[in-house]
Length: 145
Image 1: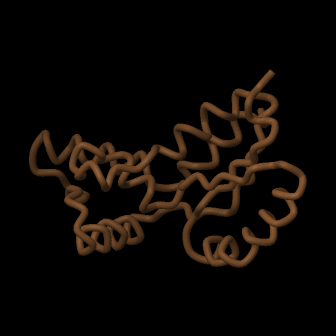
Image 2: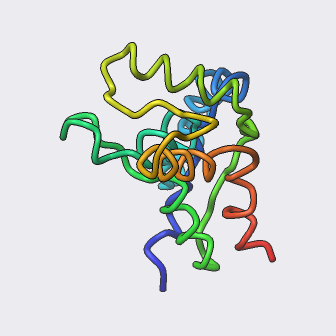
């Protein structure tokens, strides 16, 4: 028996779906709380995926869970309940803008170099490349295959 039967994992995403979450989630929680069901937020936003991918660059208080990895593992549990909202298929300009915004907020994550100049930059670029595009859907659809 799984421990997830009374929990719904609700994804925190970017842009318009994030705005919808702010208005809809309190309503969802009002109904689910009455039924004894917990609703837990799991961050799969672009910023969340960047921060979790480069945790070794962050202070302890800036560390975040790898929400996508967590949900990917959860898809293997046939009793798990996941509400996945639409998310962006991150483009290079969105990735660069998000990195810049995070750096401006004090996160010491590395720059993304589309054309790396050395092995270290190539390794960083490869890690960022895993975040680009529709990185979320293949992971979370695993449970539906």
